[in-house]
Image 1 (cartoon, rainbow, N blue to C red):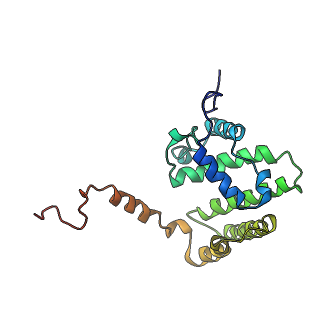
Image 2: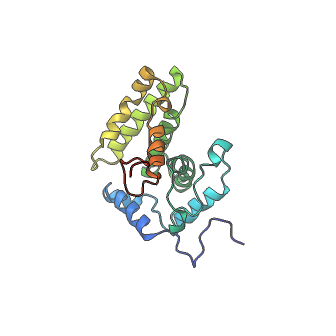
Length: 208
């Protein structure tokens, strides 16, 4: 009997549009993208199994990604679901794929690079931080950006990579990032977009 979330041979494991988008992003890293864990049927089955069998704390469980991730029927993921997927499910999956290699190997370096990124996200989401945690955040931000430059020399660093180098200083000066991020405004914008205006924006309901 097959476990829930593992694709069968009769069911297409991943939508073509999703696969093409992922492969296009990986190709931006040059020829070495072919050595990355490709989101094929085998890897997606592994990821689906991890999603369906991983126990998450209560505060994360309601934002767990769907076991049908990669298929058309899973729909759009929320920002919180993407965060849970990338920080937990995907980290476990790539660890299973890469951890068998030597730490000094290219796969081992990729794993450390992704681990640094997950640490950056985790520390930057803390609602209260101490000086020791700010020091850890500064270390992981620097380690992630420098390893990106070393592992992907043919790829230009983005402005977001430069911004990472200042997150620790901003946290030290202005406090935790969750106290000043834009998610509340995004939720308000989403609520406003769902308001029925009958395609007549800017008019009051009492207008003739």
